[in-house]
Image 1 (cartoon, rainbow, N blue to C red):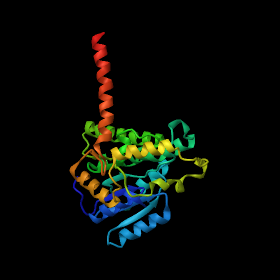
Image 2 (cartoon, rainbow, N blue to C red):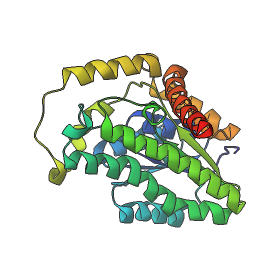
Image 3 (cartoon, helix red, strand yellow):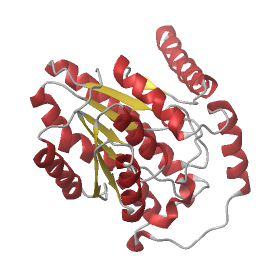
Length: 283
């Protein structure tokens, strides 16, 4: 997809991190930026920062956990600008660290409702308009934890694997429908963002007692990070890579991601499937 001045981009989780960087990058290309986030003050600051460059931006406070709020975001965008061209489903959180069975039900609900259902809501609210328009691009932000197996990060890993599957399935559905709408799933490695302080935004009804970090889980996550990611990348550098992926029509892009973690998982999967196939053949 060719990015052009006057197009409209919607970015969730736009008040900080990769979302903020994506908003700036797209606005710098002349796109009108519609920014959504649950944090209203940082959202307003981001809008002001973009407007100070001469670009056009608006902020729409949105909690992507709720379909009606994402629907409202789509309605506001279309009523205000009459079109939408790029949708970046970026809002995401991480909660806790430890063995999967130690996570509270509220941890699972919070992470899945933001990271996974938030993307589902974005697809349902915006993709019909892109299909009807006959153009556009959807960017769903996953993680290297969506392409490899991360110990100690159960809910986060499950949600990000889901985003990868959603994105690949969406691309297949659009191709089957003959709709000229692109899809990119972003699987970043480490980035210099404040996602690890996501607890500041946990809803009151989903709060859980603070637990001590599991030392083994910490050690395992650090080990996984060494194979899946380089040193933390600046969000603006990752955003530039994503913008290029949009224009090239790439389905997968992994800013700062490393292949060994993915290769290890694929090797294990291939070995298991090969073993089953060989045993079945020898029966």
